[in-house]
Length: 106
Image 1 (cartoon, rainbow, N blue to C red):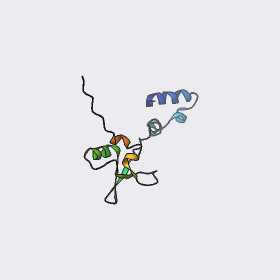
Image 2 (image 1 turned 135 degrees about the vertical axis):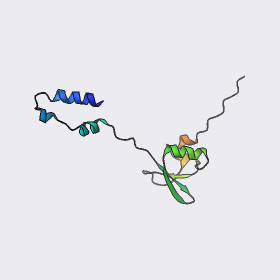
Image 3 (image 1 turned 180 degrees about the vertical axis):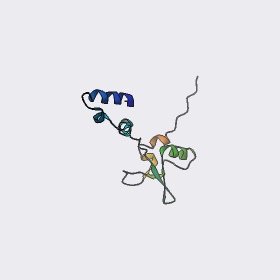
Image 4 (image 1 turned 60 degrees about the horizontal axis):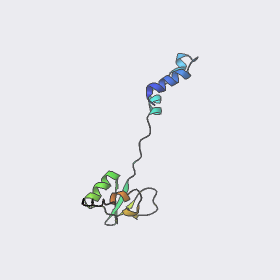
């Protein structure tokens, strides 16, 4: 919902109130319209028995491309009980998916 429609809705609800009673600070209106930020899941990676990171998905994808992260690399994020192989973590499995070659056309 855009701020203008919020204001119109507030104006419709305020019929019969004095001008002072219908004043609402812009900051209050804008914060009620803006959605919360999208949470980004970040992972730590075990390198030489040291936790490195956290790294977001974009960085992890780059690390897979250049061989720094493999499906056997140990990773951890908030909510995990223990370190796990990256290839066994549902949200990371897609990083290790290999696209099969296209079959030849006969």
